[in-house]
Amino acid sequence: MKIEKVEGIILSEVNYSESSKILNVLTKEFGLIGIISKGCRNVKSKLRGVSRKLIYGTFNIYYKSDGISTLISVDLIHSFSRTMMDLEKISYASFLLDLVLQVARQNNDVKIFNLIKDSLIKIENDLDPFVITNILELKLLEFLGVKPDLEACSICGSKKNIVSLSGADHGFVCGSCFTNQRITSPNVIKMIHLYDLVDISSINKLEVDNDTKKEINTFLDEYYEKYTGLYIKSKDFIKQINRLSCNK
Image 1 (cartoon, helix red, strand yellow):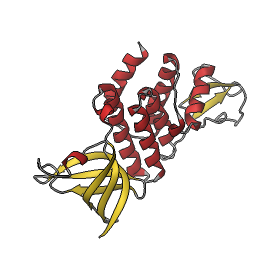
Image 2 (image 1 turned 180 degrees about the vertical axis):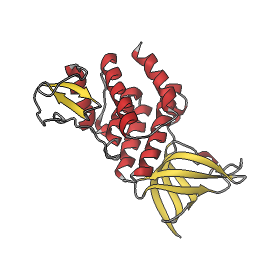
Image 3 (image 1 turned 90 degrees about the horizontal axis):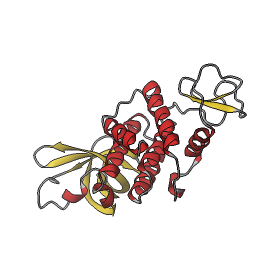
């Protein structure tokens, strides 16, 4: 094994033996890798504070491409301390870590790293976690091979007179193809198209009304259930938070 420096975010941690942990780390260089943090559960271990979910840093490791790498040290970039102290923020962040872990297990594309990193930073910096979560959920569908068509009508390809956002039809539906789909407000159509195109790192301000947020979130929940086969337990708590948020 050779020593490598990788930029990464810990997505999950599992206790191993009496004092160690196995960390699932999404890295900029190699995508998702497993790292053992030996002895990190000991009180005096230098690895103790940097061997938990949501740690973002430069990981110095003995890298093993076909197995579990070994952690040497971590140069901390961000601990997301404000997120850790806020119930709403940590709930959304935990869900996103769980979701990204499942997606990366199916498609270990290194581009996913920047998406989750930028999303976590925006949540830490007080941008609406509901909206940030939905934006990332939408973008991750591409890596699962089931991205909805949000550029034109998914049935005929027309870009004119889009009237519905339909999970059953994989995205937009125009007035000419409309049958019994749910009518979608122009603002929802505009905003989900923006969600699809926006660079998360460039977002500085979010203004989305509750009705629009609720409708986009409902579409994404239904779409994930129908096309991805993923069940993320932490989503159940997020749904409770979403209901409270949309009813404010």
